[in-house]
Length: 297
Image: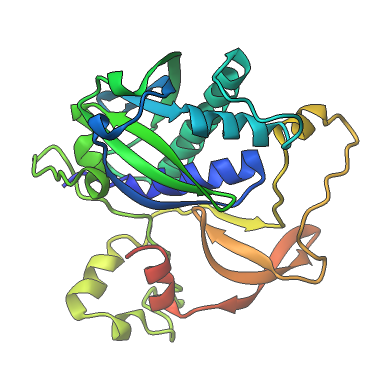
């Protein structure tokens, strides 16, 4: 089976919109789109090409008027009047948003080290304005967003090549021998000096076969990072930054730092100095089995 990117797409769609619009966003549901049920409104059709492994896939993001106008309005900080029709400024804002969503999706997926989805990258192919009833992509799906408490639709169309990689959304799974099942990045267990599992007892927490299979992955290198803090900013504020700018984060100085392994939070700690270098003292972390679960194993 092919690696399923569905959850990553939904997460990055919501997270990127939150960051760019400074409003809470959630994906309430995803369903197949019935074009005949749409009204006569217009939408912005943004075409994006994704390249990964030996596959080049084309996606179309369809953003209807009601959603596009809200996107531009909040992206500009909610100032001025809300427009009723799509214009060039709204189209530019939507293009920027879709480009950021796709870029974030690529970054997140690449961090997972899927064997069948490697070095994925996206490229905006262009955009146009068309009537919603004229959407001509076969596989179209309705993403039901809630933006700042208001329901807003976004439609995404996929070509046939990518469908097995979005099985949770499309309902299509691939049994092709060329499609490898996903192996999400494992957590490196703590080993003692003899090279066996430490007193945390990975082997005792897993079945004998599972423990032996996991040991095959012990030498995989993982990227450890520490998150100092986060904060949402408007695009216009980021563009104004210059050398010497002080950016205030939401994290308090006495709050613990987040420990991330390949982008997945597994615990918390505090900064220390070790021989003139920054170090991390672990203050809160689950047992080995908990860490495996956090990493999806």
